[in-house]
Image (tube, rainbow, N blue to C red; front, side, top):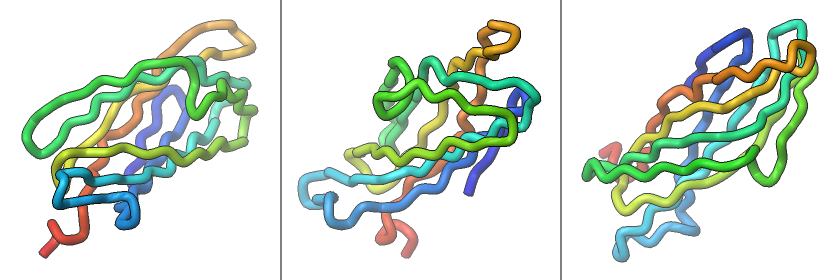
Length: 128
């Protein structure tokens, strides 16, 4: 697990290789990642936007930006967590992702960024 805390919002990431959805012979490697966002502040926050950087082992980079996550803009009360699972496909057996969420403090109505820590996606065959 990889974690980072920004403005009392902790983001943790766990990844897994998706064998059933990967086709190495076609350079298609599928990974899932589970994100847990924990609000350690005293104010409710809302996740407004996401911005991801995805880099494969060949150094090819993609960017993904958009509203919310998995079709939601969740509100996370103090002391609560929000968790979701998503996925990423790569053309190589390994790669990495990192980025940021744009959050809004619902008490002060201020926008702020929260770091999504860099994490590695690695196919099991690459570990040998």
